[in-house]
Image (cartoon, rainbow, N blue to C red):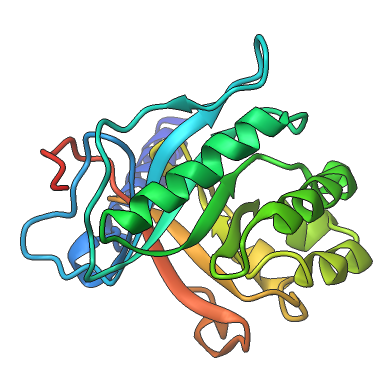
Length: 240
């Protein structure tokens, strides 16, 4: 490459980096719904209306059991609270189901305004049928006073079986679509949302704190869109 070509390539790279740096970042104070893992609290000055709180995990290794990660029971009467359980497997035993339901009852008895249970499971689009069967069993166990929410991957819109999504509509009350991996927004998310015109389930969109985000065209007008949830990353003292 000639010297002129190298200079032009460097300028193009610099312009691309500058454009990327100038893209809007997710500011938690602009939102009112948050994911709070243990050790994380809403940022000062925020006014949360909805909170998703990780209670525990059901890990892949060993026998099925709920490993609780949160110390104490939250007392949050002024927000809609979702108890979140992260699972790496679908073969939950009755003791595990009982532990999850017991925690829902304890949170509500402590004064929290419990909206329901959210299952955080990375179900790939091709394996979603087995996940739907699991969720049907869970829904049958979950008292009607609590809703059922799940996290969803963006590839459901691109590769998911439309009939399975219709079947899922009668089982879960909402899907929270994750737009990030780790701390970063997944590139090309606009293409996924462009395929969600006929997504049949109420959904929220989960954003990573500080991640790049430009709302896709027409997302705000989707009949099933229910708003955003920000996954908070900053370690602050948790208020319970």
